[in-house]
Amino acid sequence: MKSEFKMHKSSDIVGRIALPFVVMLVLAGCGGFNGAEDAQFDASYTHPISVQPDVPTLEVAATGHLSNEDRQAIVIFAAAYKERGHGMLTVAAPSGSANATVAMNVLVDVRDMLDKTGVPAERINYTPYRASGAAARAPIIMSYKRYVASVAPCGDWSDNLAYDPGNGVPKNFGCATQTNLAAMIADPADLVTPRTMTPSDAQRRGEVFAKYRKGEITATARDQHDSAAVSEVNK
Image 1 (tube, rainbow, N blue to C red):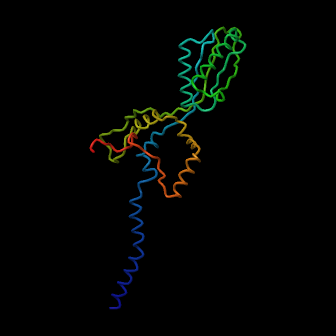
Image 2: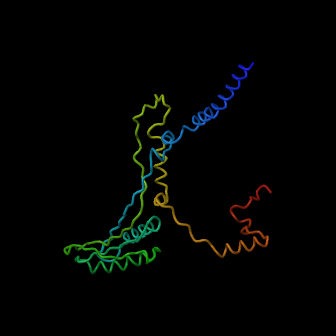
Image 3: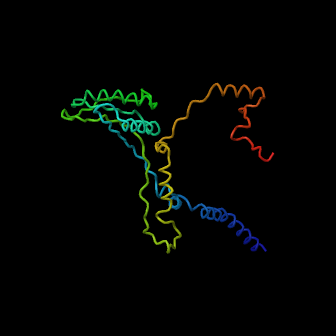
């Protein structure tokens, strides 16, 4: 009886010692699909979006007054700057060229066009650039800094999709989705550094706190014309 008791007691001790290791092994098996293994199924790792700085330019003819085509091009260029531009919008006029005097007159028209398009004057940097003395058609050059998002070209069909014992993913997995995402981002600079928050409305915040202390409704009043109002069709 004593030997049986000792055997049962020993087995219980071994079981208690081994149980935590068994649990650890089970959990390890469940959590093993991570890190490098998980990365092959994540398109952001296999097809990362690259963000690079870019400097678009616009050359405006400085041979007289602005043409309608030049004015339209300036409007489009200014709109693109306001949407994705970072830093200053540089407007460089030729210096030392045969048309330097005429270019200064055209520069006045360019300044007026930028003012009409809503580009703040403090964000425009007017500067000269050295042009050849023989140049009779040296242009006014407008430029700014922006960011461009791109993905490596898709189309790698080197894998045999009909035979995959490892049940992996093809090399093109997620490439099209990443490419579309890079093309749809409003400003790729957001992928580099997030935008700062706009200042809070201290006056509105004070009004909400005052109503809260009085036990009043703090939400903004709504009416039936609001887009989120309940439809009256079935009533």
